[in-house]
Image (cartoon, rainbow, N blue to C red):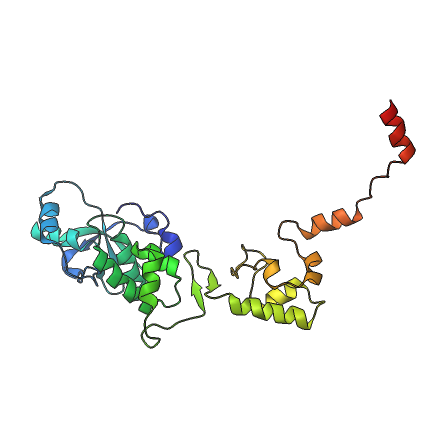
Length: 262
């Protein structure tokens, strides 16, 4: 069905691993299409006239609704075909729509700019917890455009403090309140370890941890007396080894003058 590289990171299914099956055309339901104007009749005729083997369509198993491939289905109907190659997808209906959008911006007859914007607005309502970058990737839009679409009344589009990114990790939308909370905790207890503060605020000391909101620059929130406790580029083991490493003996003035004379 074209290149699906990276889809497993955006969705719960890996299309490359789905088996191809023959499905009765009469069993299929019309897609919840992201195309505002519906299918393109010229493209349907073009597909119906080709002798090439067309890629399998995607079908939402629980509803038998076409996720991707309505033009191919219509072409098969034009040719009086009773069966068509398909891959069944097991996912929620909301995810099925997002998958329909993404597959139609990466291959075949691509969605128009209006189609993509309308689809992004629907996905924002269906998945208010998805990050702006994730929705932008799904719909092939700029992040600025998605942010503009997000700017809607709270009743229609919940404004959450956390969103899920393309990698499946949850991040805070605005880290400023967390930075202030961390600063307050350190001011109240100057002896508190950064690990305890990170646990209480939800900020991660390591970007690779599951709580992926990164620890801000120490100069932004950490008082001077805590700088000795945290260094962004050196591990605790390195710092300990430096503390226990014996210092080199100092050279005497007499030795230095003797060497300079030679």
